[in-house]
Length: 106
Image (cartoon, rainbow, N blue to C red; front, side, top):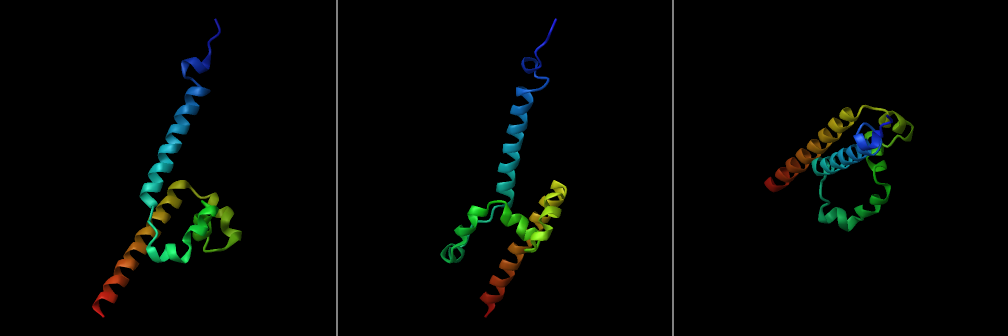
């Protein structure tokens, strides 16, 4: 007797649905974790112009603007890149708060 793997969930459509569900969950989780709303000043300066580049902005930032390093970034393990992005975000938030505190003392 022949069995149909797709109807049994041993491959094909069943795995594709699970994969795409997990992928969309991962993307949504990353977005929440890494998102930083643009300030009014950034909006006024035109930060929206960078939206057309999507993930290239992130790769370029991680490569410190060096296009020859983009391939290295793309080949790094996911968890290393995510950790670095979280570190960058935490560092930027700290620097902003620190700067605001310094300015408030003046």
